[in-house]
Image (cartoon, rainbow, N blue to C red):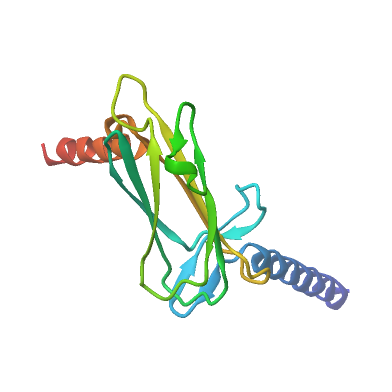
Length: 173
């Protein structure tokens, strides 16, 4: 009798182990060399790897220049599609295209994509521009997106930096 109970327990443990390893494979991170990148299903594109780094540079004037700087930590030898989305009251200068494609991204070699836009200069109302870039390889879907504000002091990034500074100062006392 003890042999049957042990056999049942062993069978149950094997089934649980197989089930947990199946689940683990589905939610694990993608590995590229020594780096791991999070996968995210929180985009309209479904499950994507958020491995494209994105930074914004802005120069505000009558015609403002917004630059999206993108790069990866690995070679991506497929086209990258990008798209700008302009907030209310913003217009591209001289009917500039809001979408395009670059041929590839090479490891740690930033690519700058510029947009000249009217109405982004600092005033009483914050204006927003959204940028997104995504890789076209269906077996290796990479993606990034971000929003830049005309009023940097009201941006989410600035608020996060202020909170971190406050925590640091509070911890030093």
